[in-house]
Amino acid sequence: MNNFIKAIICLSLTFFSLSTGILPKAEATGSHSGTVTANSLNVRSKPATTSAIVGWLPEGSIINVYSTHEGWGETYYKNKKAYVSLKYIKLSDKISFKETKQKTICIPH
Image (tube, rainbow, N blue to C red; front, side, top):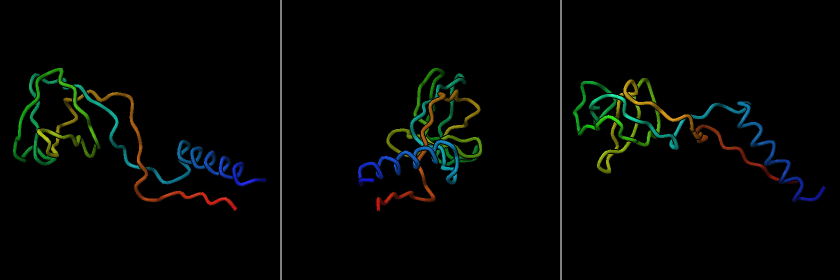
């Protein structure tokens, strides 16, 4: 078998492994948006209700949510990392995944 065919097979197996969950799960990141459902949503400096409020978003605002953890969404507000409560965000269905714990490398023989 030539190297090109081996490379195609290797890439196919890698994508299959990622899509079926054979490899360790990656954290949800980046490419989903959310719509604010509250009348006014506080934007906070840290993911806690006791952290400083750095701004607010009106109902219907669309934001990018880069990661989620324990009910909070990481976003950016005025070019700084910020957090919003996911109770008041309707997330889109589109989510991408970034492998964070293990890299898969295919080396054709």
